[in-house]
Image 1: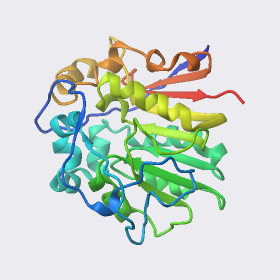
Image 2: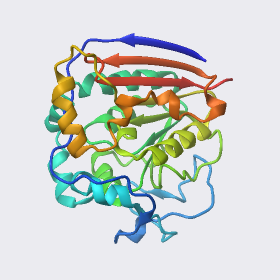
Image 3: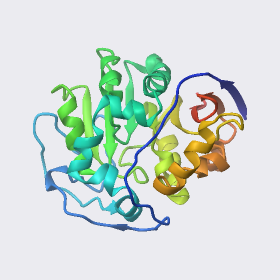
Image 4: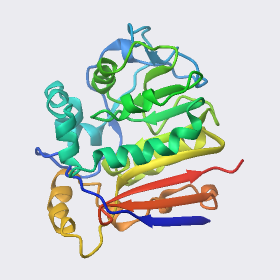
Amino acid sequence: MEIKVDKCNGKLTLRKFFVMSSESAQGTAALPRPLSLDRSDSPVPATSIEDTVSLEESRGTQAHVPLPVYLQQTYWWAYLHPASVRIFERQWLVNLILWGNFAELRDAALKELEPFSNGNILQVACVYGDFTERLTQRLGPNGRLDVVDVAPVQLENLKTKLDNDTLHIGLHHQDSTNLRFADASYDCVVVFFLLHEQPENIRIRTIAQALRVVKPGGKVVFVDYHRPDWLNPFRYVMIPILTSLEPFAMDLWRKDIMEWLPDGARDLKIDKQTFFGGLYQKVVITTQS
């Protein structure tokens, strides 16, 4: 396994603040959601729009995608309630949550995608702020971006932020642990601040799915929390914040993302870079050609 580690100085992150934490519940449960965002059960190629939420209109009534219990119990206040979307969908607030580091972390991830601007890119989970808009601006004339999320309200919110470009952009109602795309469908997969929100068993499956759908010679890019340096004062600020509001996030302080990779992926090229005194990390996994 080839691992490259760099450290960068930057600014920093906060994250969501409301109330409600919970143990890592396993299993799933359903909440009411728009039928127009449902999808079929059969795998589809990356270019299919059968499973896509059109940027012009929703289409089709398909199979049910349940909301995970952990998401409902732990993050309802941040991602599921319509009022939450209205509150958190503010660029300045997202930047504050990340202690002023949003733009640096966003651009670090997007730089990794530049070689694939004319290829197929998959974003796993919607992101508050302008991450996806900036990504679409970097697509080449032959490039395509697909975004998946398990929460219909997040897909609907993202629709309002994007141009009506159904040729180059597709939004899909899917679970990150069960992507309905064929193996080796994408040139690059990006996962931006999702892993810390998932229980460990869910996180392992999300990582495995991201690696499954990336093509040989492609990249999987993770940006997320990381254990800060001992001398970083935010280390002591973040402990009570994360333990109370982000109960799964401390996993990324205790373990490297590499420890959750499938056995067959541990010999791949892995580049790791940390930011803001180690509080954040970018991990890039390049698959073998």
